[in-house]
Length: 303
Ligand SMILES: C[S@@+](CC[C@H](N)C(=O)[O-])C[C@H]1O[C@@H](n2cnc3c(N)ncnc32)[C@H](O)[C@@H]1O
Image (cartoon, rainbow, N blue to C red):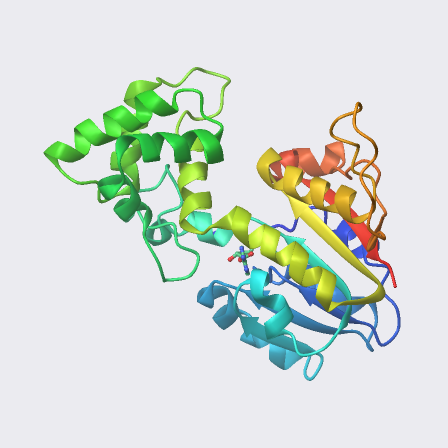
């Protein structure tokens, strides 16, 4: 199994402007790349690291020992960080999405390249991807695939899924991938045609966009004045949520209708630190293709 290579690591940690005795939250512990970098900045730094995936928390116990007592590893969702982290903090970093370990383990059901149960749950709770494709109505499936996968052929894929499941319910990732490949044969030079549908199901099964929205609000209440929130996202749906939140909270929302008088603006609660998102260098994108779509945005909590 390949080790997860952290994306935009130096940029995200630099964005937090780490200082002596600072307390930070890594909301997406994963393989511990960000957490290690934070803890290594300075021996007085403390970190609360969260992950909703129990396997990441188990694998991280060696880090807890190594950095004792400076690292607390918490099993839970970053959308609930305000309840899970017991004190106000100086910085919060989120590196959202799935880790290479999750994708590489066929039994987790995230990969359309390896056969495994059609699961896709980061936590072992809630509906599996198989339950979604086997029980949802055709129009509901089409909406999920369109909305979260931005897949133009969502209606056709949903129709074929429903036809196929009448013969035999879906159990594995490759069964689903095959149906998508039959609808949209692979064209050389293009991404695998199953990519967007798998992304859509993963986002739906894990309520990833809802989690991100809850995390942004939670971060606002957890940060100390001058504390910094840095978010690395991997697709436009996520980046749009982060961008809008930062615009609204920093008082930069353009007036929706120029014919109406300006809306009364609330006092800004964040100051934007990245006018444009930070993206990986060409060297990082070559070394780690997963980095290609990454975007980092950061903002400082105002008093
Ligand atoms: C891209 S990886 C993070 C990698 C990490 N920065 C590193 O350097 O190793 C994303 C991790 O976040 C976790 N995750 C995703 N959504 C989450 C959520 N809502 N709450 C907590 N953890 C989440 C995943 O389980 C995964 O382990």
